[in-house]
Length: 214
Image (cartoon, rainbow, N blue to C red; front, side, top):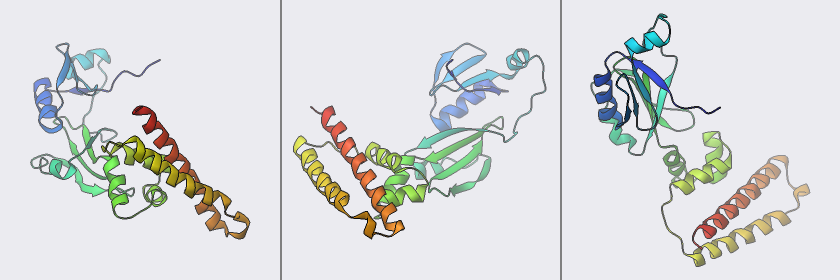
């Protein structure tokens, strides 16, 4: 079995198409008349045909029981587009540090637009936090943080730069592995274990990057 796409019923298909283009930059990719599929795989279905599909069950809008989620690279710029929209709540920052805005589409479906999660991780890293500290702050595993930071890094590395980074990380890893954990407190042992794991992940990413430019 394979999941295909989310589908929402709308009262005015043309109005909804214009809305999703204006605010979310989604284009019509497939047009079946009473059903269209937008960029990213969201399907809009006319209310009349949706009633036929569902056997005439009662249909209500603005139930607030779900949402369509998006991420935006220029989140601050996107906030300027919210004027005139009906907001679910004012823009806020979640406990893991991601800023989000939620608003209704013309039929009361909730739309969430959040800050690019990689940008959130990068913001914390730029403030001086280590990968381990960012992981704690965002309540995720360190490998996710490393992946996000790598995704946000568009710099191209030379082979020599990768080897130098690898040698430096290996040296640090060997030093960490030689530390006698029996002399450390429990919290220090935990921190050391996390640092060793992060170093190994970083080395694996470097190896992957090296393979991609061979």
